[in-house]
Length: 163
Image (cartoon, rainbow, N blue to C red; front, side, top):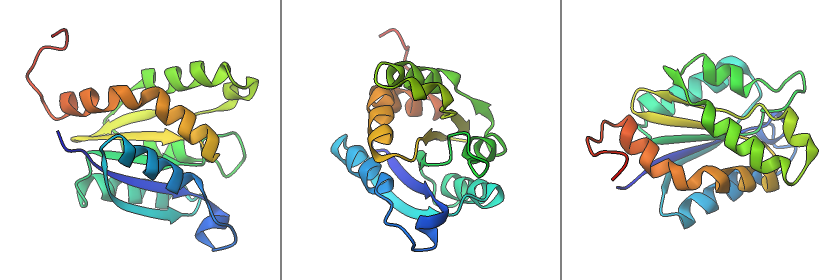
């Protein structure tokens, strides 16, 4: 199965050109190493409506199977990526956030403040990752083995899960 992905980097400073944001390229490289085609990437500001609009467009217009965001999953006042994601998904997949936090807790006690999450919009999987390149790689590595199967099931793969 070929998976088409979009990577959205959520960063006020990055979107204004005030900082080179390394998390998007780090996520893109890891996805491509896993055989996932990244067909779209962009940097957007920490604006809830804009994040929601771009996620929805990547699912509905660009027709990506997977939309990965990086940034905006913490507790700072401008961290609104999970809220934007929840506003456009059909169903939430809590196991993704739980697994990422569980693995991250083995590395840092700060993992408890992560609000990273995942959900489904139509035939697309949306995955929120932290903005730190290191944390984004660690979190993506945790759930990467489940992505292909999850996307296949979202897209109505009729095969049995236990096979």
